[in-house]
Length: 373
Image (cartoon, one colour):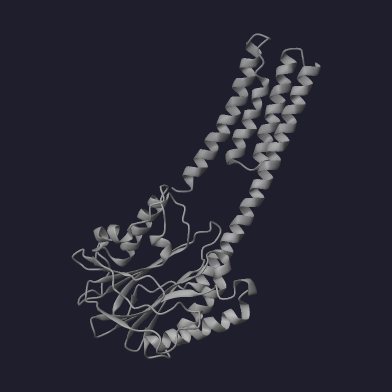
């Protein structure tokens, strides 16, 4: 159904172009000689170029040129200087339109290749989070600010450890393709270190060392000391209804209760990763109640710093309560639609979000039809 609609639209435009050639030809012949409609034939290849390729556009252009010559023949003016100029001008304009079609199609192929590479990079770097991981149910969302990129400087990852689940969400300074290298480094470091360190501060210190080594080797001299990564590390134990969090300069998440209440945890953040200040004892662990039915909404600052046309920031904390009872994926779908509507579809920064819900007893099945669980 989705493919049939554009196909019908293209056919309708092509039919309109051919009909216009016929109508302009007939009206030019039957109207008085002081009314000249032949030059309007250039509309036909121009309309065709909107939906068809260069070959079809060229055929319609040739049809328009033939119609112009036919008008001259019917009017006994085929060899007149005025009509010859009109025929040559129409032919040249048709050739120009075909050339523009060729350039457009080449640009489309190049853009498709770029998007294909970006999508492949996203699949390799940002592994899809599982729907269930130990005691929690998960959903993730990524929106890149750059049109030709599917991934930028925002990142997220999750790992199942012996006693629970660990998650990370982060934001590399900058956006788009230049930040992918640092994002890839941090994702790889987390996936390995999450299983080697029993405490979140030790995990944060390990990530700090990885980022620092990377920046020492690859950071441009003109940006020395200006590259860093904010990150939020979480641990949800299997048997304890709490969540442990260590923030390295990252924004605090929203805690959504099943009754619609929303709160913002008061965290004690350490410095961002990459500035050389996160030592094993340099970050703290904040412990919050996180019982069955509670949902944590993790996000990067691209969400709350998104502006509408008037410059108003997106009010996530005010909008989220209405979707507090939704399943994780449904919650992110609501936020995504609302965020895009707020910004008019133009994001100023990359956006990453994770919805984390503590599973309760009897929640091993699929989501309910209305998206609530």
